[in-house]
Image (cartoon, rainbow, N blue to C red; front, side, top):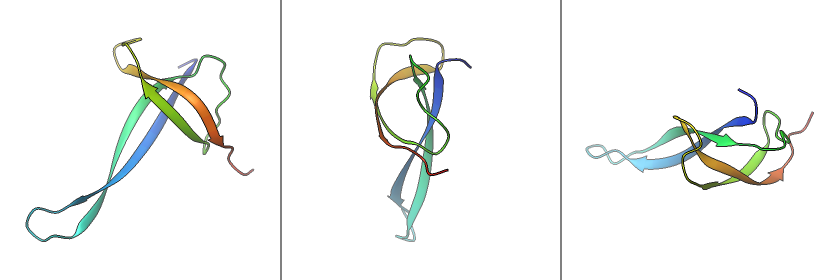
Length: 68
């Protein structure tokens, strides 16, 4: 998809029975108007009005470029 990035958001949740913290990942599709992102970049996104069926987030800033 052109002008679209997939962002993985990791969070830790506590298991309801065992109490162990588990890593959960959510994938978001975000709009990248100028196609500046590459795989492995750390980015900031914000929620916006729906752009397409799956895309409701927009790229705000590239915090850190991925090392080559």
